Image (cartoon, rainbow, N blue to C red; front, side, top):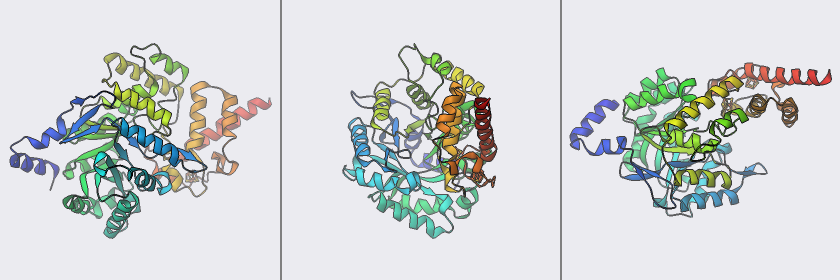
Length: 411
Ligand code: SF4
Ligand code: SF4
C-alpha cells in the first residue's frame, strides 16, 4: 500500500484525529532537571537521543565503565532514547547497549536499531539478523527500527527483498513499534522511497552545514511533503561542527545566551519542524553533560542564531575543508586499510588553523602503511561513502599537501 493511500484510509478509520496527532504536533514538554521532550503519537521522546556509534573506547574496546556512567546520567535526565546499529563499533554497539540497558526496566527507555541492507542477500537474512539483534540487545522488541542506509548501493536490495513488508511482519507481532528508514541517497531516490510505504519516520542527516550546501533541506522537504516525522542524524557532522576555527568561533562568542558550537548545532537541528529527536554520538561523559544541559534549557534557535549558523557555513567553505563525517563506512571496504577519516581530519584541522607544523605532527601519528600515499585508487571506498566524496582524489590532495609542507620545511 502506498503511503498516501494508507494515510487516507487510516484517517477515515480514526475520524481524522489520531494519526496526524503523532506526526505533526511539535509541542515541547519541559520538566525541571530533564531534557526537553516532544510528543510522538502517545509517547514523549527526548529531543536529545544517544547515538551509539562513537562510543567511549579504551585499548580498542568499548569502555563499558564510562558508557555505564553515560547511560545512567542520560536516564536520570530523561534522555532515554538509544540508537544502535548492526555495524556500529565493529558490531559491538548492540552488545554493549544490551548489556547496560538490561539493567533498566525495558519500558523506561526507547531503543532504535537498523536492518543492515548491505548485508542482505536473501529474505532469510533479514529475519536471521533481526533475531540476532534482539538477542544482542537483550530485548524482545525495538521501539524504532529502520531499513538502514538506503543509498545508491543498497536501493535495489531494499526493493528486491521487499524489506518494508518483511519487516512489517514484526510490526504486526509487536516486535517493532515504529518502522522507518535511514537514508543517504539522492533527493531523486528519496522521492521514490518516501511515498512508497506508510513509514512511521525517516532518519536523515540534517545539520546547518548540509542544509543548503549539500541537499539536507531538499531531503527534509521531500519527507515533509509526505508528513513523515524526522529523526536527525549527524547534527554536528561527526563532530566537525564542534571543532570550529577561531574565525568561525568568533561568530558565536559573546552571544546571549552563551552558545558552544555543539549547543548551537544541536538546537539548530532540533528547531526544524516535525523533528522527533536529534541523535548525538557522544563519546564521553563530559560531552553528554554538555549536551544534556543544552536540552534541559532548550529553546529553538533565534533569528540571530540562524544567521550565525549561515555565517559559520560561509567561513567553513572558505577554509576548503573536506566534508567527511568520520562515519568509517569506507574502512569496511578498503583493501589497503587506509585510515581515510584520520587523514581527512588532519587535513581539515590544517585548513582551520593553517598551522603546517601541526599538520606534519598529526599526520605522523597515522600508521605509515595506512597513509594516503598507499591508496591504490581502486575506488571501492567511494561506493560506501554516504557523503558521496571522491575519496582517492581527496587523499591525493592530502598527500600532496603533506609533501608540499615537507618540501617547504627542507628549504
Ligand atoms: S581507493 Fe584507496 S582508499 Fe579507497 S578503497 Fe581503494 S585503496 Fe582504499
Ligand atoms: S570518507 Fe565518507 S565513508 Fe569515509 S569516514 Fe568520511 S564520510 Fe564516512
